[in-house]
Amino acid sequence: MSKPAILTVDDDPMVSAAITRDLRDRYGGDYRVLGATSGADALTVLDRLALRDQQVALIVTDQRMPAMAGIELLEQARPQAPTAKQLLLTAYADTDAAIRAINDIGLDYYLLKPWDPPDERLYPVVDDLLEDWRRAHPAHAPDLRVVGHRWSERSHATKTFLARNHVPYRWVDVEEGEEGERLREAADASLEDLPLVLVPDGTVLRCPSSMELATALGLRTRAEQPLYDVCIVGGGPAGLASAVYAASEGLRTVLVEREAPGGQAGQSASIENYLGFPRGLSGSDLTQRAVAQVVRFGAEMVVARDVVGLEQRGPVRAVVLDGEGEIEARSLIVTTGVSYRRLDAPGVDQFTGRGVYYGATASEAIQVAGDDVFVIGAANSAGQAALNLSRHAASVTLLVRGAALEDSMSQYLVDRIRAADNITVRHRTEVVDARGDGHLESLTLRDRDTGATEEVPTSWLFVFIGAVPRTDWLGDLVARDDKGFVLTGPELLRAVDGAWTQTRAPFALETSLPGVFAAGDVRLDSMKRVASAVGEGAMAVHFIHRYLAIT
Image (cartoon, rainbow, N blue to C red; front, side, top):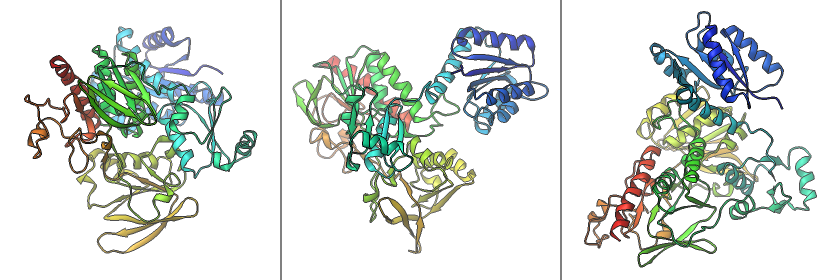
């Protein structure tokens, strides 16, 4: 396979030669670095690469070119190189145009000239862009195969587990083509055995659980040390931040996640209001970066294990795992976040995983191509999902119980939704019934003001309603409100039942059980934003240091 290309464009021959040289010195071993001295020449090069079916990983162009400006070139280049990353080289006076291009054409990054020294100013930016491109374009087809059928709850759960743990796989549908049926027969598997997961070493997993998948794929499912300084339960943004800060500061750290790192944020198609990423980044991208940091600093990550209980053993806090096993630590951070509340309407439960989904991953967005999709919810997660699904679906209908999106959704998302041609918002509308034969085929909608009902055909419903904290496993040791959210810090002192019994005041994120802290969405009155969850995760480690110093 030929090397993917990096294309540089600058009308100044000396500058063009310099940027091409610097990129070739750094990346020439893995990429074919090509140069052009005008927008027209660059488009000709892209046409030639397209005819050769050669991938373009990155286009680096100057903004100020006389015949065709860099932003105009990048816009015209999109059809020939739709997946290429785009880097604009610009003077300070053109930064406003570059920022607008982030929204207008999806510009990935802009860099002020000059870029010397490249080791400090150019290469870190290009490293990140190429790493993102490589993750989206693996060098070869994945060896892992999943054999199942489209409208299967277990097939959906398996694909979701693999995708969220960033395990590449190839989907083979037994109802499309001959390969799926041939593989099923070769494995002597019945329809009840589906999905099959065919591991490269020859192992055939039949309708596997998350634990079986993780074990077969070599993911860590057990803690290695008898005692840790801190155990973190939950791998969303708050938990990952806690793990990074705790491990980097020398604490023996373990993180336990029942599904996959990232939490609800990890499924987001685009997080656009996170500081430092002007173009935004996907939840998957944020999660991968965070996991790399966690591993780099030496924290352990245990996945596919659910925590079912908490015990106090003198100065030690022990979490009990499902099945068997436990983890003991001198302190604990609860970052289990929240899950979407189940939709209470007749017929919905039987179609979960077969047309009705809670949350939405990138794989679902691709599967809805050409179909009519319905999304329930009015928070940011619902808005992001609607926008992502609209890139593939024929139409997306956003069902909102309230009268205005602005009441619960960030304005930048509201503006994007209103500007999308194939997204319709239906206010004061709810789902009251779901029907189908084997999978979802229609919904009954009700107008909350008039009571009028309407049946609409669809095979896709994505639900983003409410937040239910995952805190039952804490038992009576940790005080919570009537909805299950954890009380921390000053809230404990205001609790009428005397939740805090120590002579000292609780630390800001400390729960009613000393040494146990809570951060992120699971905590009462948290902001429910990625940035605040990350901040609280870091803060919890600060208070753990103070707690360990007095115990």
